[in-house]
View 1 (cartoon, helix red, strand yellow):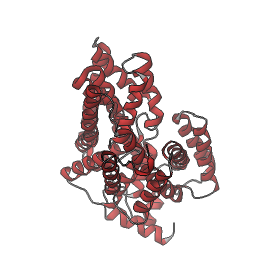
View 2 (cartoon, one colour; view 1 turned 90 degrees about the vertical axis):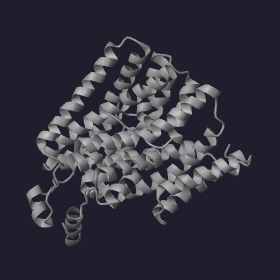
View 3 (spheres, one colour; view 1 turned 45 degrees about the horizontal axis):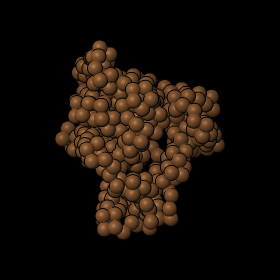
Length: 416
């Protein structure tokens, strides 16, 4: 390790700031209120690294870790980050507030949709937001490539992950292959004790006493079992809804788009709760609302059982991966510094870079549908990468401009 890297790691560890519970919850609420799609990754990075609540290494480790178990990756990353900063109580409150804004917005949109029918402004707004997301994801992809693609071997792993994504291979198998390739191809990192001597940095433990963390895990596990039991034994439409969403949240790997087919199978094919058109509209609502993309579960739940259904579907979708995150973080903390584990994690992060390239191309294919959308995408990229403008203001500017023009009867650049 060269002196510059050593100095940077020492500084980032010693300068780490621990926020108050209020600061943590407020920050996660604001991200849930303002972050869209894969742009959420940039928001989390800017918050956690920018305010020195986590080190770059901790965030990198978390990003690799959350791909090892079911659930939406960015929601899992948010839960991991909050748990690493403030323990069980902080993770529970912060992730609840992280999801709450998108839940409330989706609830409002669901009420409007099922009461008054289609909402005309959704489609043009969806196009503008998705175009801007392409620009943000391009920025993230460039950053990830520079950080995680450090030679021909990591580039090979990224390329293999990209090709497997093209062939629609399940994300679980891609991550497993990346782990194996990392073990086989990548160099063994230096032992933990040598790294500490070189950098002067000491590992930062999880917050709180071990006994209190275990008590939190037991409580979270009890709630996990309770939700599963209620969904299994409550023989009603609401019970079936809870069990169905819980099942998807408990077993589905990847991001929102890879989990969406399972959600469609449950809501449209198996239970006939939604028509295919209603399901497509629910996906569009999930795109235009900030926060986790799988908030579409709220839309499904509202159709099935109104307000109660929306709450049950949302909890069923997100709680399993929240519980998994707490358990895996505790286990991961015990093994993360073993050389083979670090090689596997390096392989996962290289693969994630390739997967990001696939996501970027997929988003571009469906989002860049007119000349104006390229302007939105390029503008978002320039604003976040070179002008360092907060993503909140980028999205708000796009939303405001498109809504004003739509209601004035002057669609911008013939987007729709």
